[in-house]
Length: 405
Length: 147
Image 1 (cartoon, rainbow over the protein chains, first blue to last red):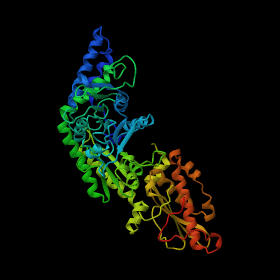
Image 2 (image 1 turned 120 degrees about the vertical axis):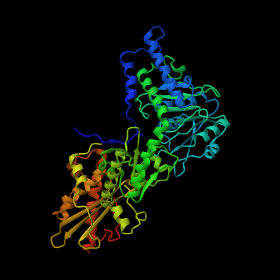
Image 3 (image 1 turned 135 degrees about the horizontal axis):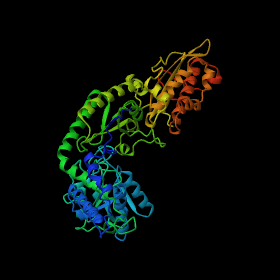
Image 4 (image 1 turned 90 degrees about the vertical axis):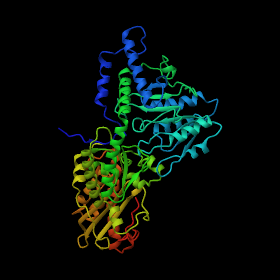
């Protein structure tokens, strides 16, 4: 039997919690009704299960159940929020403000809108990956209809000051959307307190199933309207047609219920594991650098660059753990992570980055094993690295005129 | 990405890792790639000036597993070849031997470039004929060759 690696890529996706799977199963086999069927018990059961799920999802973000719209995942939620606002409010204005390290589901949606005649401002971030509310304030114009700033970054874990940005948007009468995919269940969120009008979330980052997400759409103060992106039977208050995926929705609801009930212990636990990993590795390896914010970051995320060692090459050596790299070696573009670039991390260090995403199912033993593995392999690869050798010889590798290919 | 057995073997047991004294007149050094691109290879050959045979070769590589394997394989192939034979090594042979996928072909190109750069450097140091004087003089103060 081939042993599977230790899973430390929880910013990418998560294992579905067995309690979630258990909750979902009856909705495949016994309670298989269509939640829109109003005339028989199969439909009633399904609708009731969906209503329960809606309550759990609303509760984890401080919303009311009626404000939750089900989607296929956060990519769809982000598309619906941004394109939906753009379409509905185009008489009011055509300007959107976002920032450089958003997920592609936001950035590429904005790029499409630009092709359709909208104006988009992409705010730069500081060296820790944060935007500042003053930048948002300066970017707003009379034509601004939406600000979209993520709650937490998927690569570097940096948290954005969304409460301040939300309050600012409120005071200016501009709608505020946040992609909270990485933040739900990892940091406390409250749409009232944070002035959030639209919020995207997904099941599979919070130990729920893949293929289901939700968009919170504020119902009052103000009542946010969206232009539907999918036409059909008028489900979900007409904002998102399509038969509800009842088993997946039940799973998303259960995942939110668990995440909310266990959030404080889980934050503390993943933070402790993350710090054990980070300090374990960085205290033993000189010239390793933490990417992102030192404190304002997701509890389970550590994104570390190891100078003079290439990230994909390193991943091959530490294949007993599943992680991600900002190296572009697997892509044809040869361009490293745009997120790290936006922070001003040099391309060389971006190629050398590894993202560790600790989660619910990781243990201290996992962390200790991974610390040794990474330290040994980085040391081995540095001995094999011409860059490391040159630095040892006192050569400034930044002064060399490299032949770019 | 799944790696071929041969890539894994070279990655886990790289052949001929190390360095020669770049100032040695019988040593040719090639340094290609760029840190910002995620690949840098340093390849060195030690040539017997009497016979023109490459008696030893060493490498150091910053890069992915395929880049490490390509340069490791190159050092194996170089040993025992004459300089002329070494110049005939094509990146496509490396691709074939290591079963590199299309996205990794650039690693083999870099290895071929490193071989050529090392030979060029050796020739520039050892010969003074005008025919080869165009090669840039590279020594302990290593400079990368044009790719």
